[in-house]
Length: 393
Image (cartoon, rainbow, N blue to C red; front, top):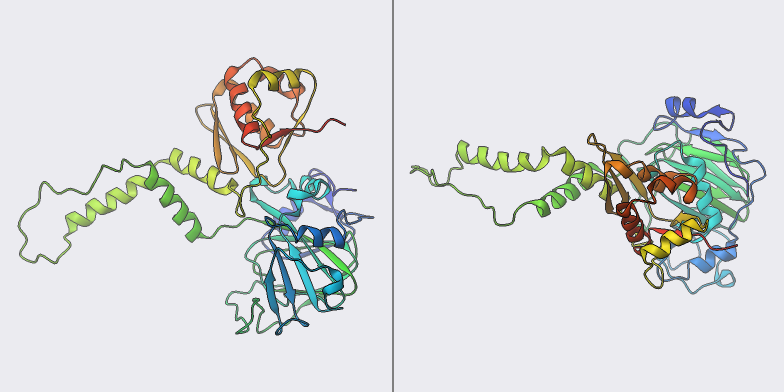
């Protein structure tokens, strides 16, 4: 499988710097032959097989042929293609990158966006005339054509107040007046910023790879942080008022009380270290379960060290999100699927290697392999299923 150009080269003839400056979260971009000669690493039959699995999120949209128009069903499914209508339906499977290594490799081509922003690669299949209707997403997405041809119609400006057709299982825009109309072939790709209305219709048997990005709402951010912060506070500390004096209106909440309550809340949000630690865990935690792959039997540190010295390489587990923060102190925190691993200053440079280095083996870990702290952390990550040794060829 051929991959997209590396982040320091061109993306469909456009520099990465120009893309980020002029298009990212600003306006749509059609990229013809983003991957020349691209061939879908997943077949329709393989995608349908994935939709049969209990722990894989899959959806079936039946515009026609269901119990009613635009019926939405959730997997796992027992159907195969022989049971499906000839047209006007789509199946969508999330996190295919977690299960198919060749799909996961596609993410290497999008490293010009911070990796912690990437959500997953969803793969959809539709026969002729299949689609999910005109809709908006609240996040950035790259739509890579994998097989067949899909007609995309889009509006150029973000939809501010979306009006949705009532009484449908799926969210379809009531008003959709496209500004652009393209047919994408295998290897073509369309970038859409958040809330750009779009409608895709399969022109033949069609597969599309949707590379989506995390964009938590302010409500999610505040709710998660305040919950995290409340867990860090001493549960025995309570509101008190030893300086209470008589007040003639007992129902009044007086200014000095409000000042105390404001101080309690502001105290929780003034600690930058607390915020940093929370965000690293929050933004890397899986939104659909736990894609970790722990070994059948826990590995001991000496065994791990021996395998590294023998030349075995490790890999990040597909579907697990990784990020790191360098602290002013020189320490670093590596986050993986919500876990927070401390790398003290002497081994802090190991964090970016484990997080997003091109390879993980004795060549780039040699300067840390004498550190018991590093080996202990590495052992914990492997036994939690966040890193794994590559299979011997």
